[in-house]
Length: 124
Length: 124
Image 1 (cartoon, chains in turn cyan, brown):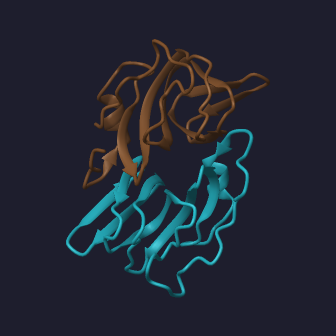
Image 2 (cartoon, each protein chain N blue to C red):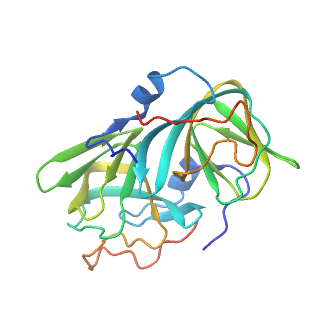
């Protein structure tokens, strides 16, 4: 696991350093948990994380966490935790920037392998 | 451990719901980790967390993480991780609002028991 930065990590700078969607970057670790940042645009795939909750914190824009029975809409400075084992997807009509907090070993597509699975999430 | 909220948690509303300094509230859990929010003003006590890293994310204002050999200044949307075992304190000249991410069992004053130890951190 990459070491943490010694100083302040500026989220705006980190988000400005990449442009691709659905490609999380790691910006900090807390023990064996990782803080990732991701840009969302469009719709992700249905999946679930069998072993972990997953926290979203919106930095800029608006996103939806869609469950089979309801939507949770998140705007800047909104937090939501997807419970472990519950099928969901994320979507955003316009580009949205979000933080994701989960165990470092978590795969972005959970139990659904596919072309949106992030093979490697670099520490930036 | 309290259940998570089913919908969006609005950080601004949560911060507006209390006024006391150095009194963290829990707003969400990710497995056995907790997201706390806290208002800082003045200077905390020197302490270390022997078993865990501790992440700060500033929501509003400005705070300093002071180590024995250096200061790390954090402004809104800045992140910093205090490494486990390293003595530190936090301080803020003007009121600062921050998120703290750490294992749910973490005591705010680490190995330094005293009047600033938060006996109970309610889930709001």
